Length: 629
Ligand code: SF4
Ligand code: FE2
Image (cartoon, rainbow, N blue to C red; front, side, top):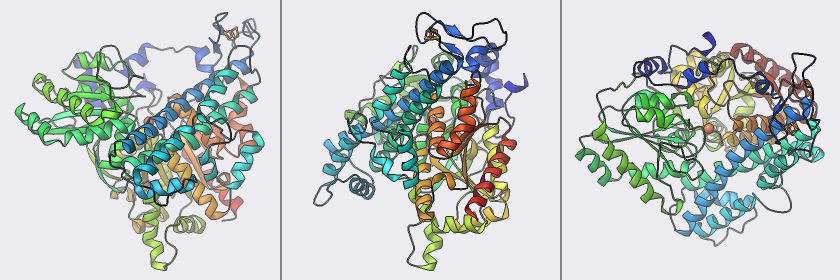
C-alpha cells in the first residue's frame, strides 16, 4: 500500500525495516496495515462510549441508521465531547510533566543540588512577585517551585503566565471566559462537562476544551519549560549529531526515550561516572554511549549535545539494530510493542515511571529524591548486558550534524549580534521585526508534532519545511518535527542553499540555520513566549502577526491540546492528518472557520505538505497586508 510506505532517503528507516522483516519483527507499519480498513465511526468521531447504555454510534452513510445516541446525544455532542476529552488528556500529559519538573526543583532546593540558571530563576521569581532580595538560590527555587505547584489547584484567580500574553489577547480570553484558572481544575471541568448527560452544546464543549488547552500552553507546558531551564540550564546553540547512525557498535548503547528531562539529566551524570565507564571497559566495550529519542532526546540534545537517535517511528528500529543494551523510558509516546521487539534481541527495556509500566519490561522506578543513585543502577544494568549482544547487528550509516539550542534567550542573543552594532538596543527582537517589516523575511512558521502511519515517516515535516524556507519563511520546530528536520540536514550550514535570498541573508548574518530547533513538545511554550514578545514589541496581537503553525504528521492527544491552545492564541494551524471530527459538520466548521472570528486563529486540514506550505504563505501575506508591511 502506497500510503503506508516510507521515504527512501534520510530517515535510516528502509535498511532497518528490511532487517526487521528478516528478523521477523513486527513494526508499527505492519500493525497499521493489519488494521485496515480502520473504523469509520471512530475516524469521524461519532462513536460514543461515555456510558454503559452505549456504545452508540451515529450512522452517516445510510438514512435509516441511528442519528442520535440512546441518551439523545447528537453527532455534534458526541464528536465535540470526544475531541474535548482528547484535548484534556493532552493538556494533562503536558501539565503533569510540568508538575514533575516543579517537584524536581523543590527537591533540588531542599537537597541543595545545583540550580543551573540562577538568572532565570531570579527573573521568574520577580515576575511572580516573589521577594528576591537577600534570598539564597535554594530559598528562591523552593518558593518558585511552590508557586508553580499552586498553579495546578489554586482556588481563585488565573494562571500567572497569562500575564505574558499581549493585552488584546487577554481581553479576547476574558470575553470568552476561557482565561485559564488552575490547571487541574480546567482539565477536570472538561471531564465533568463531557460526562453523560451534562454539556450537550458543541460550542460550549469546545470552549471548555480551549480553557483546558490554554492551561497547557500558558500553564503546564510553560512551567515545564521555564523550570527545566532554571534547574538544568537554558539551552544555548551548539552542534549535535542525529539519526540512528549515532549508535556505536563498540560501546554500551543506552537510548533514553520519553519526555521528562529529570531522568535523562541524571543519566547524563551517570554515564560520565568513571567507575561505570571502567565497568563498561571491563565488559569489553570502549565506553558508554548515551543517545536520546523523541522529546527526552530533544531535552538532552538541547542542553548537553547528547546525540539525537531518532523520533517516534524510529523507536522500534533502534532496538532492531541489535546494539542497544538498554532503552530507558519514562512517559509518553512509548510504544507498548517495545518489550516484544526487545525480546528478540538482548535489549533491556527499562520502564522508570509509576505512570507508565509495560508488561514485559524491567521496571526500575526513578525516584527524584535519589535521582543519581537510580540512574547509576540503570546504567550498570545496561553495562552488564553488553556481553549478551549477538552478531546480528546493523548500525545504519545515516548520521548528520546540525546546530540546535534555540531557546528564546539564544534567539535574542543571536539577534543582538546585529543590534549591538547600532548600540544601546540589545536584548530585543528588533532585528527580527525589522527583517519581517522590510519583507526580507516574509514571516515565521512553526512545524511541530509527531509521526503517523498515514504519512510517510518525516516526509511531510521535511517537504513543508523546505517549501517554507525556499519562500523566505523562517521555520521554528520542536518535538518529532525537529528530529525530522535535523535528519534532513535542515539545521546545517548547507541548508542555507535551500533558502530564498532573503532568509539566506538573514541566516548568514545571524549565523543560524533556517530551521531553528526550539526543544521538546512542552517547549512550544517557548514559541508562545517568542510570539508574545514580538507582539508586544510591535504593539499588536498575536493574531495580527505574519506567522502560522503546522502539525503535518501529528497523532497524539497532546498535539490536539497544542493545536487548540495555538488556535486560541490567535494562530493559524494546519493539520496534516484529519482529526476525528468530520462526523459533525457543525464541529468541523467551528474548528476550521468559526473560531477565527472569535480567537483570530483556526484549524486548517491539509494533508499535502506543499499545498499546506502555500496555504501558510497565503496566510502570511494576508497578515502582512493587514499590517501594511
Ligand atoms: Fe450512547 Fe449517550 Fe451513553 Fe454516549 S452517553 S454511550 S451517546 S447513551
Ligand atoms: Fe514530544
